Length: 194
Image (cartoon, rainbow, N blue to C red):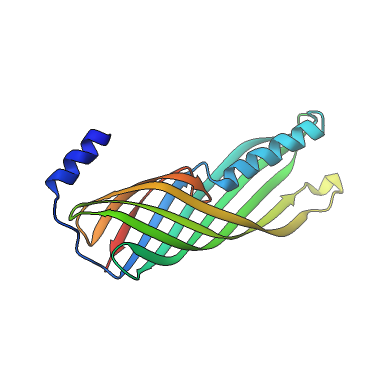
């Protein structure tokens, strides 16, 4: 991978054209929300000594939307918004007991550092920190006589991208990122600069 990056950098010796604005759409995997959901389900199963279990876990996201304004060619300031949703079936003693749904909405101010800027290739890092609103809903069958649950919690969240790699013409680029946070440990997307 390093050899390929060095070859591309050598071919594209010219710095990229400087753009003030950039907007990106991302999709990632293994986000903070995913880890939280796994921990919640595991904790519930352990605490109930295995009598309460979850199955059919369906996770959408994290889907991200970013905007950065470049104060200079290297530094961009902006914000990241992320949406994720999880639905799963609950079982008590092996019998179906209802449905659970968690929705995560995150907003983070962020800073991006474009430390390699070539005509058709770039590398960068970014950091964001903000809050996530988690809405948790549990629907039980009417025959259970258990009241449905609906509650929201706010907690701190972040995104640390150690390395981002983008390629394509200056106006529209595809990219991949590797890091840790609410956008995921790995994510991909498309970015428009103008």
